[in-house]
Length: 124
Length: 270
Length: 145
Image (cartoon, rainbow over all chains, first blue to last red; front, side):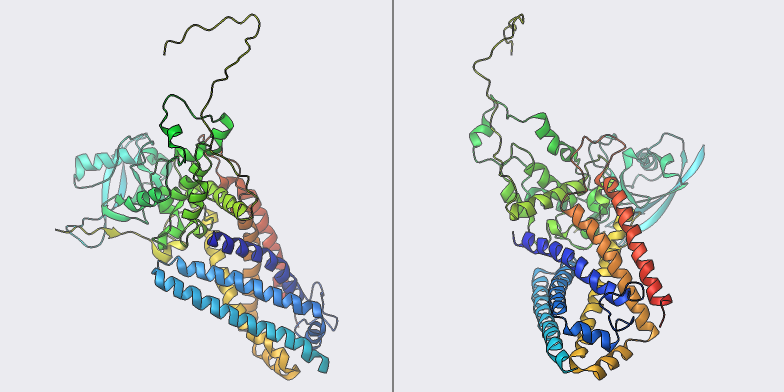
């Protein structure tokens, strides 16, 4: 039932991303229409607004969860796309391992950045 | 009588390495199917044209081919419904072409055999005991009957996008049939079939392109069967699936109370 | 003499074209393309947004790098891709867990398939996606800075 487990998690991750990334998109790209978590002016990408969000512990968790689920969902999808291109079994397994390792590395980098941003935000 | 142009993709393994298009102009009258026209071409114009056919009434599945870009049965397709004076015919894609319009369907049959398309039971005596029948209600029959109408024509396999690139993908027909047998109350091999389709190029390579259900000439709706199979597998993994035993043999009730005024039946003659 | 069959597989091209298909088949192709587009952007995005860890100058430099018209349009495409991929994804989650496909029925011509049953939901979801895309487009291009 291994593929069933991986696929079910892929669907669950999709649902989680819908909410978390939807929130992120609303904050960043609907900032002129609905000002969500942008207390220092309308521009979502201004340093002041970014600093405010860096200070909120909630956003650390939002970004870590979003990162983890998004990396899993996207790399599972990419793994499926590669697997459906009629590659040999050995090549398919190789890319599967490469994507898993690459995904973990990106998760570590992103999690470090999210936590470090919270720590560093105290200085500003 | 007007003329209709048939542009047919030919392939002759002895002569050429690649397929080529050949144009035939044939007189046409209303009521003719594409298969009738192919027979006319073979009889009157070019006897080397090869194509499969058998029942000529849409029940055998032999004559599936790509007609105007869509996988259809040639015997079931009226030329007037195509609404064109130029009809393009090609062999089914996603299979190897043996000659002209004849595809090699053996990979599809091998994948079908792989999913064990027969009633699996532990108690063989019940299967072999021909005196009695299995007890299956009308409701239980309707749960899988739609998917048993499949005529193995290969149209769904030709329309599937995953089949286009992935040779190892099981395909809509075997996957739909795996659900047909799993949902048959006489069958006890659900778990085994779950494991058989839970492979890298198995059921989860279906992404609901749903073209298989659109082209199916018998309304089998393989996409529905595959999604219901995925549902069964996920619920089974989450331990939400009710365990069902394969149904037993129909036993006649020993004591029956006859209603008043109803006469006794005559003695059995069979 | 050995017989050579002709390999009539459509290949990867078959994910997009190869016949006259219904709309759901093209939605599958677009779902794949948008997924790959978002993935490509996402990997770069992790590195660009991590620059906030190094202070305001680093952040402002990173934002200046991605503020050109090419990048702005690219970002809108990613937003479009997310809206489409998300709403089509809702449709796929419902379908693939067996909710919108309907029960097995006796096939009587003209056949009522699961494709027809899910079509109203597909249309509604695409209209909602289009609404959010237009809203985002207003913010991107007319909301102006």
